[in-house]
Length: 283
Image: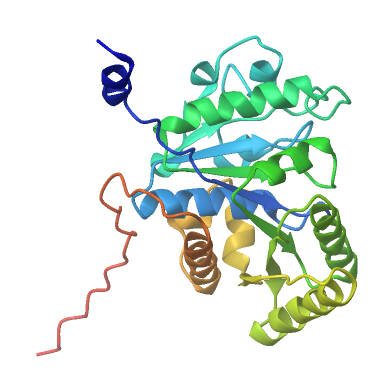
């Protein structure tokens, strides 16, 4: 067999699986809530979805989903196990790679563990259509490594001035590294007008000082059902209903439009519906 024949028999390697990273420099703005619900909504849309907790030291995806496992991303970074050994089944058909609370391995000065973890995620992601990555607060090396690898970054903020300032800090760092600015998602807004005012502030600052556009990714309104779902450790995308869930669906649709085209590997799972029975008429 000559070289041309051998080349013709080679199976082309598929393109790498897209990453969707959820980031926000300020803690407590709802990154894990958004990441877990987006992963569930993507799975419901028919995409094989891998959810990765890339929050070094304070990973709490497992808390939001009531999950625990023998291995975590830090074990992969340390070379103690393979990614396939750490993957666990999550709700709604997703697969999850948990983080570990209290570990500083991924947040340290040595880039080797982070690079090992990211290679392992990419290897495991070959069996998935999309990877959703929950990152940590701040703009440390682990968060920057994840968002630089991502095909789409959703930068999460609230209308609070400190949160918006930190969102701009993330934009500034990514811009200096030659990366596109994150798509801003505004969480816990009272209404559409508040979301648009918040997005306009960031867009104006980015345009003035970075000469770059800050895309708008949508908003999630202040909704007690979302807050209750977080407290109950049952994401609203699984069991909820209401305006907050509708907002999350819109953000998911916007993210899908901004990502590279995804394969739909199986039929979409219909959302649970509430059947309301009308009372029989009185005789």
